[in-house]
Length: 107
Image 1 (tube, one colour):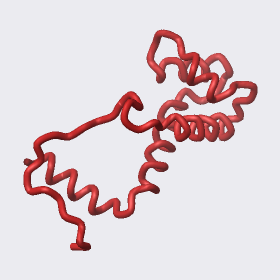
Image 2 (image 1 turned 135 degrees about the vertical axis):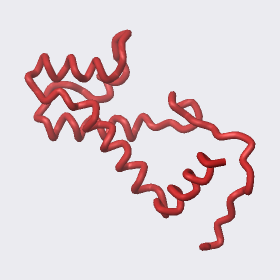
Image 3 (image 1 turned 90 degrees about the horizontal axis):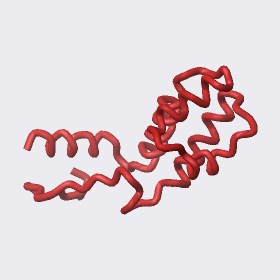
Image 4 (image 1 turned 60 degrees about the vertical axis):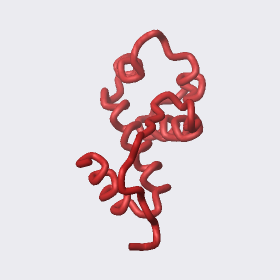
């Protein structure tokens, strides 16, 4: 072990899906900027796009945008891969994190 100690038993796990605990808007804007650049989507401001989403899912909004512009319909999944990559780069030891997560899921 590298000196990191985990509790033997967890009493709670907190998930932050709506940026209440950790603001990830910068990461989302950066990833969407890259997806737009990589798919040659011009004239769409990533921050404005995120701030003015219609009353539907983010995935459906991206699919609608891609269809409107004649671009690949997998924009949402490209974005998810970039966000996951950004999160992974910030992890110091991915394999240790994976082992810890697996042990929590088994508990």
